[in-house]
Amino acid sequence: MLVSIIIPVYKEVQTINTTIENIYKSNKNNNFEIIVVDAEQDGRTINIINNINVKKIISEKGRSKQMNCGSSLAKGEILLFLHADTILPDQSIDKIIRVMKNNQYIAGAFNLGINSNKFIFRIIEGLSSLRSKITRIPYGDQAIFINKDYFIKIGKFSQIPLMEEVELMLKIKKNQKKIFIINEKVKTSARRWQKEGIIYCTFRNWILINLYFLGIKPHKLVKFYK
Image (cartoon, rainbow, N blue to C red; front, side, top):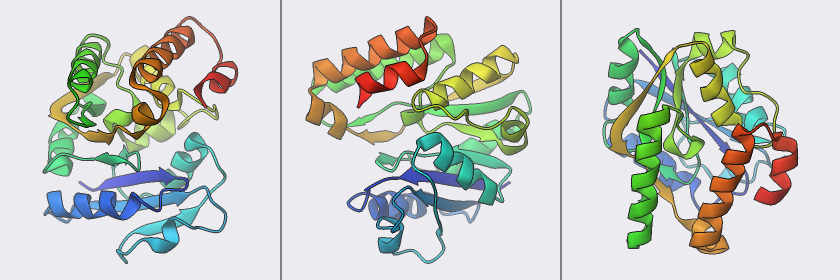
């Protein structure tokens, strides 16, 4: 099986090569491809990618648009949607393939890890892990993956400015399909928490996701997120 890793980027010159190098370093088998989708029309991020094997494309801005665009180029049976500042655990691709070979699962994700030594992030990670185990609705920073044929069947990502990955997981749940959470953690950057404030960022995100579950449309919520 082949995994297509789709990375939507916007002004990620400082992070993209590190993320790509880690994927190749931690996965020795040739069972993946990488597709980077740049929302900058001059291709500033994709133009500095060092690895010649990476597929590069320019798209309209918007995570859902970029990820859908990347999926159209994917050759893999499995799609992995990865944030540009998120590092995958060792042998992550083999672990994804083992999960997806079990036909009872249609999608999955990893547990959340945050790349910081501060103790408060361990609390955030623990709460995230507990939420994922109970709800089976992982968020985008957990590196979600999905069967490509099923992804196309349910209409790909909706064209919404926020919550696109959560909305996709909810579609799967409503169709009574199973989502697997791999125990290993990704390591996502703490930069948003550090920039906005750990307490503010955490509670803002918690409030937004709960408002979304209560039926508030992403187009209204997005102005509070930026």
